[in-house]
Every structure is written in structure tokens, then in C-alpha cells.
Length: 438
Image (cartoon, rainbow, N blue to C red; front, top):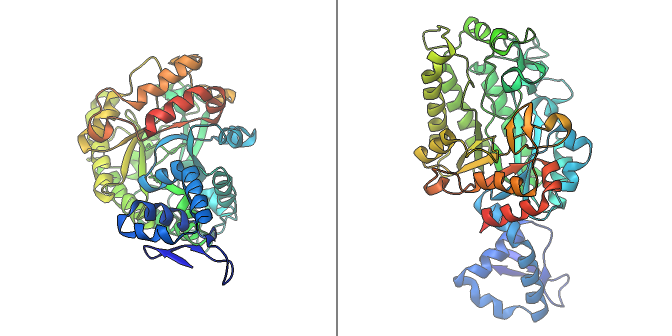
């Protein structure tokens, strides 16, 4: 057995013969890399048999990109799979594209509680997806969705559930251009909800540590205030604003439930603290919505015209980002889920990052998601312009060095892309990977 800086990274298979790397513990990799870098331990190199030293060097060279990602937080290109890409195999194939550094593993809270029993969790599907990422030596971004993903037992009467108040909405993304989607959630400021969500995070983290998978996770999405996606958003539409009769009057529902911006601020403080406790050594990313992400209601409970509420909700978003920054010092990233080739990266998102001294991340757009594809490179949802190789690279470059970025936000930490696009524009993925990780 040979120790480097207190870490066992080589051992003999028996009492005799050359020392060989110990592959049983993933900490070996980080310990070995740290050993080579640390001058205080350099004298140990002279004790290694030549064949063991050569094998160690080759292994470290092969693994150095993924090790750097794990040690320094998320960097590069991350896949973001949506359900169709999981079903048709695009996600699995895209993980092999050169230049892909990591992948999101995305599950609803309810998918972790598939039995329907209160606070009973089954991590089999999470483990299966993590194993696929590990097989490709990819870093993992963990995403657990609330909103539409809240398990039914949250609303059930005791002893089968928590018996929290149920708010029912019908939502249509892209301001009514998308399909009508039912969303049921409790008021997210209720103590029972916040405690249950925090307990789920802790149980998930304990499971990942117990099976050794936590080492694969480089970043976790800060969720809990969601509608349909992982973005920071509550249902806030009305049928007359969207032109769709199927959409519910979310503003009235929230007003009657006692919504106040101050309550959302309190909820964010508790959620950010829960992520800090459950994942104390991981980076945490908050994907924001820049407009109409919250109902137009003030702290007196008055519903306002959308235009008059803009300042209230801008101030709310600023406060939520500050609260998360305070709870997660030195390991918090702000993100926007939109890039397109014919527009600069959103100045408001860049301002949020720059003002708070935060790194920034992006996700491309999903204008063609309904067709089983990914991003568009121009136009708007429903009237989009397809990408080619050059325009897709231009889209990514909008986020790599966003206009107005400075300091930590001068260059993106990472960009999430959809599996179809990674497969279709692999050369652009490679170029963006180089720019993001240099």
C-alpha cells in the first residue's frame, strides 16, 4: 500500500509484486491528481515502479477534463434532455458527442415518489440515469422539479398525505402559444410544503452519498418555485391575456390564496438554505424568468395591471437572486433558458449576474421541441427560423461571451443544449466546448 498526502491511491494485489492503482474508490482519481500537483508530496514519486507510474500518468491524462469539471464546478457544454429525447434515444446518443462535458438528470419530485405513499422515495430511475452519465464519464447536473411535479400525497388527507391546500391552474407556455397544461401546487410559502421539499432534498443527497454517485454531481438546480419547467416561475396568466379559454385566471387564484411578494421572498430564503444544507459542497444554479414570472399582485394583496406590476416583480426577482447569493456564497450561478442567434444574450440576465458578482449560465431555446428537435436560430415561437451549423455556433457564441458581462459573468460557466442539436451540430458543440473550457 502506498499513501500520497494521506490518500491511498496505490496498493499491491498481494504482499509482493508491483503496486497498481486502486480502482475501487473514485476518490483515487482526485487524490492522485492532487498528489502530482503538490510539491510537498513530490518525493513519493521516486518510490513508484516505472510501470505503475506510466499507467498513473496515462490515466490522469485521460481523465483530466472531467476531473477539472468536478473540481471547479460546471464548465462547458451540458445536455438538457426533455422527455422525447429520453424516449427516442437521442439523449443516450448525444452523450457520446465529443465536447459534451456533462448532462442534466431531470426528474419531477413525483417521479421520485412513484409509489404514491407519503414521503416514500424510490431512487431507481435516478440511479439508472446517473449510471448512463457515469458510463460516459460525464459530469451531472441534478434537477428535481416542483410545480407540476409535486406528488399527489402533498394534497391528500392524513395519514395518506400532508393535506396542504391545493391550487389548480391551467397554463400555456410562450404567453399562450403552447398547449394548455394543468398544474396543481400548494402555496409555496406554506411551512408544510417547504419542510417536505427540504426533506426530499436531504433524502436524495443521502442516497447519492451512500451509493457513491454524489461525486458525479457538479451542480444542482435551485427549484421549488416552479410551474412546468425548472425555471423560477409561478403561474401568472389569465384567459384574456393569452386569448385561450382553457387558461385559468391565475391572478385571482393567487390573490384569494393570500399571495404576497414578501411571502415568495421568505420561501426563497428557506429553499436556498435547504439546498445549501443538502448539497454543502456543490454549485447551485437558479434559472430565472425575466418577465411575467410572478402574478401582478402587490404586498397589500391588490391585483394590478401587468404594466404597473412590472416594477414590483423586477424588485422581487432582484431580491430572490440576492437571497440565493447570500445562502450560497461562492457557489451560486444565475441562468437564463434562452439564447438565439439573431439577438444578443438578454441584457437583464447579464445585469443580474454582473450586479451580484455571479457567474452566468444559459440554455438554448426549445422552439422546435414540439417537433422532437431543439433550438431555432431566429424568429419567435411558432414562427421560427431553423439553424444550420454556422447559425447554431453563432447562437452558442451569444452566450459564451455575453454582451455586457464583466468579471464572473464575462464568460459563461456552461451552456445547456438539447440532445437533438448536439447530434446535429456536433462541430459547433466542439468549438463551444473549447471556448468555454479554455
